[in-house]
Image 1 (spheres, rainbow, N blue to C red):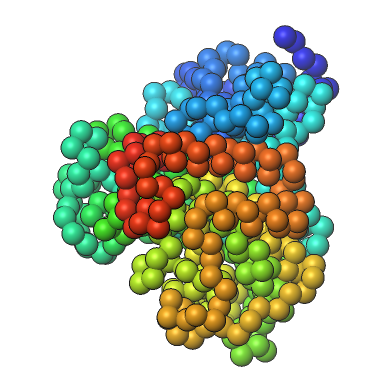
Image 2 (cartoon, rainbow, N blue to C red):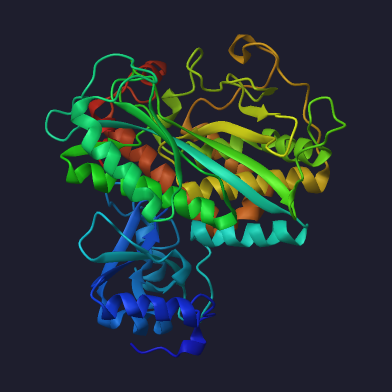
Length: 464
């Protein structure tokens, strides 16, 4: 089906960018381009296009099945999500954001570009998590702020056949095993080539667990980089006969993999979070912003700890929060404020898990933070001891079901992310819960939270 260019709000195909891309095609550097669509889990779903057809699709859009947004991690279709039977399993059209065009060093003469889905009438698809981030960033800019963020993801690296790590026990900040040098150094060399500025890599708190941090970035670029990072790590690991898994809790007796989200707001060249006259160095805006995230924490957890397995991370003495708290440089609270008494001051939200979608993380944090700013919410007193030991602060939800209930009851977050997305997300997650219940005999019993079943590993380990 041929569509007019005018049908879409074409903003990304800038002449100089497109000309540079075409030169890569002419000299044979790039022969294929992936049109990537982040699904609801943050997994890259893509079509590969020969270079000779690229320009046509930048103008007309590439047809792409909208039901990909309603798939579970194993590709099963979840009913009652608004993107499947309700639209007769129809297509959207991906329009590429040319600023995300990157040559993939690990793939043969192949580049990628992230696409934004549109309906045939040119309307942005409201269930796209990337589109929601763009809308919330525009709202933030109307208030005079820019968002600077950095993601911290942990993952496990194991042999593809044996499913065993290359080193036993806890090797925190220890020596990288010889068996893993090839894959890790290819990751460290390749990621900067696709726009992800790696700053540190280290062994973490579990056998085969690794954390790689990359530099903070502005606005949507930060989420794009996190999406690129997670999918690239998995793909490069596979080339080396390894599985890199961001599954939150693969083994009950080993450390969980988290996602810490570092955030600050800026006005021009100045941090809006830093106040040199405040004893903690925190501005009123910073306090309002973090208070918003505390106020909406129960709903946020559904969005950023999005699988049934994620909830086994929230345990005492596990460097993961169990209650709705904040503190200055306190690793046991839900929000850790890094009050550095200068422009580097920022907040680290520690609720997220390795299994999450970075676009949804950013959207959720923005929605809550913006509400805090608009209503000038004030946080409670900071926690100065180990937060796990306290009974006074409100507890976090302990299961995905209760977190989804909180999300459905949170009018602010629902409105900010949009009813179509909430309908999709909740429908998909309730489908996943029913699937787990059918497979796990003791799912509804309390002891389920103290074990990791083979079914969970089969469902999540390879794909997340």
